[in-house]
Length: 56
Image (cartoon, rainbow, N blue to C red; front, side, top):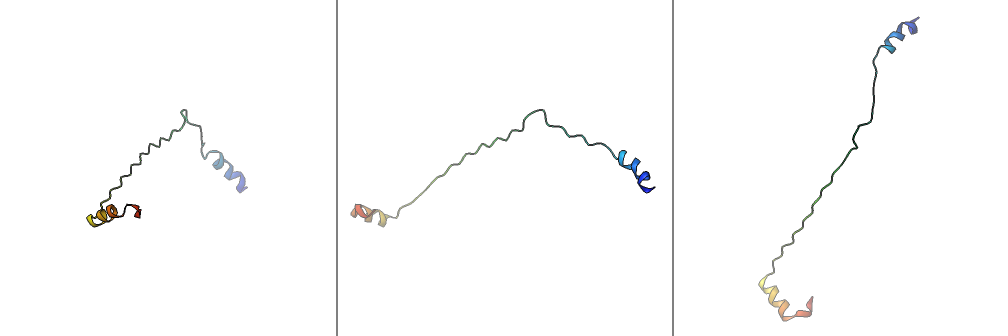
């Protein structure tokens, strides 16, 4: 008897409609990687390298 009383609740609960989108999904990944290397050389190190060019 309880099952018959619950049937109208199940059918009247609502409707869910699922559809695919009209346009395709686009993901744009514009990635720009810039690397800057800055180095400073001590004057003593510069003179050492000039005196011994084969060290490096």
